[in-house]
Image (cartoon, rainbow, N blue to C red):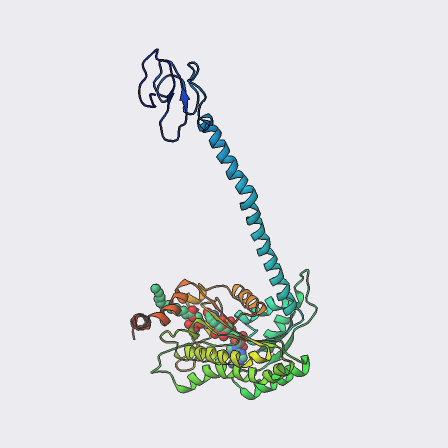
Length: 384
Ligand SMILES: NC(=O)C1=CN([C@@H]2O[C@H](COP(=O)(O)OP(=O)(O)OC[C@H]3O[C@@H](n4cnc5c(N)ncnc54)[C@H](OP(=O)(O)O)[C@@H]3O)[C@@H](O)[C@H]2O)C=CC1
Ligand SMILES: CCCCCCCCCCCCCCCC(=O)OCC(=O)COP(=O)(O)O
């Protein structure tokens, strides 16, 4: 029996089988070459030339087109009976999970008494907006009572569909004054009865070399960024423990995990913050009190403008890194979600700061070399 690819002589009727891979055609095409040639028969089809030598094998009866159709049908069956339900099922479960998460978060935040320090500017101000929109009863803390009043007016003027009926309370004090911090805590507890969530946000940064910086500057940064939040936390903690309920948030920084040159006081204060609140988390878990440490990268705020320098004066420069950072509103939303989901810690930064954190831990030698060359470069740029 001639097979495909072998030219049949004209006038030689009979069956031949196509042996091309995948073709199961049989035919008797007279004077034809195998299917690929001229005779007009195609793969998988019976040739036009007469009857066969007897019943054909069953497999040969199935044409390639029919098989293709059957395969396509099977695939469609599989898609419609397995893949589509699986896809919609997963989407449904995910949507349900997000809905439950959102409902839990809403219940947790609505009516919660939330104290925010450093509410007069940047991230604190945006946190005030985000937590107010979530239905919280706010206590806004700052050093400037006029700025705080302005913010209260702004929040109360917001017309949204779930308008928060609670007018924020304001408390004016300087975090670097421990006595004032303790008094403020008393004032807050007297006015609101309790605190559900404390957001230790206020802070200042620093620019300068260690060798030129007076110790009083290190102390000022430490008092604002570390001892202030520690004092406020300690003042509010007993009432949280009594209620066996509370949530303490520390706005730290990527610089609570890595140290970069000319930020000594700031990085030290943020490392201390990270350490203190990590210890606190472990100690208060037995009272069902949550601790969340948020470590942002650069945010577009007045932080660099307000930073103190080696002699204690204001730096007054909007750094490029700060200007190109994430918006304070974006980071505030991350803080809101982290609190709502009771996260232990969050790193909110771009790729380079995140990689820097990993590099510091996994390959410290390389990290230190990079930091040393960064210090050299910065010194050169400043001509010092
Ligand atoms: N911006 C950034 O790139 C990053 C910021 N962070 C952190 O975010 C937090 C908020 O800073 P950010 O919004 O960026 O900076 P801003 O300078 O815009 O805001 C700082 C806030 O802290 C308040 N504050 C400063 N010192 C004191 C003090 N002694 N007593 C009471 N309040 C004080 C300020 O009050 P006042 O208006 O009176 O000055 C202001 O409300 C800080 O802890 C900062 O370290 C972390 C990572 C990156
Ligand atoms: C494998 C490749 C790894 C690449 C890593 C290279 C390391 C480069 C160093 C990057 C340093 C990032 C510093 C981020 C600092 C930061 O985000 O700080 C946030 C702040 O608190 C800002 O305060 P500041 O006063 O400093 O503006």
